[in-house]
Length: 178
Image (cartoon, rainbow, N blue to C red):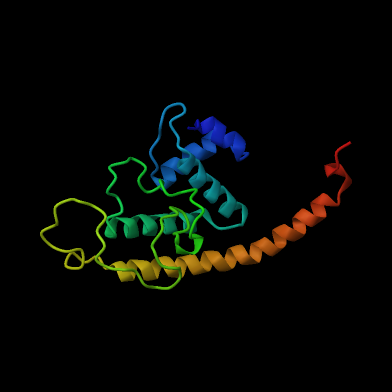
């Protein structure tokens, strides 16, 4: 378990910065060392994507779409306050995972397909289905994939610049140890 200060120090950011992220992303706040490694992995993903010049607004939009997808898939069956973060940090089947929540959809992205009808919750069914209520998982998935592809292109472009910057920095005498 981690404290907010521990995570801030490890990612070279202030605790105030992470407090702001918690507010803007609608994340639960805990006291002391109440933050799981999955919570830390989420913060690490956001910090890394921001370092790769992905706008925070795009990340928040993607986050809201991911949470909507997870609700439509009934992935929130664990009763955990952090159910939408619990898969963060997993390293298997990376091509099948959503970008921020790291939830495994079971198919590679961006395939544009999901196995519909899966219900991970054991709750009683609603009187009307999500489709009748105006929710369409394929529509939400389409929105997600569109934003995901924009982020993917931006990251690919920025990675080349960061590699060049890292090579440049390594060659500078001020980075060499005495």
